Length: 154
View: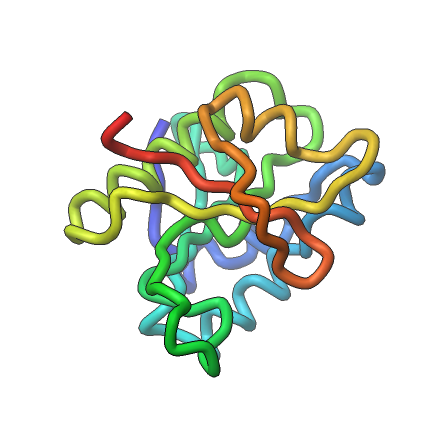
């Protein structure tokens, strides 16, 4: 497994990735993620997840973001912005690989030891996945999503 930068050669494959229909309410489509990455190139880090030559997922990290820029007490955060593993490819370790790769990139860049992620709540949602990876609820919310953090030093 590996992550690859989104390029003119693989953007079509990225746009073709779809999660299961029952998961669409929990994660934005790749096209929205790529638009956000284009608008925020210093913040966003979009990558395709490959198994061999086959794209099986999409992950996007963020670096040095304040959730509330108007709050001087809000700290800079880095973490997982999006994770889309293709329908029919889930449960094979691709999501875990992508999250760990984001954690390594955060570490490589010398960012915070806390990795942040948000998720929507509801049956079939991603919370059990993130909790299994060691993320813990912070008690915060961002919009209607739960904020979780993983301590890289733990």
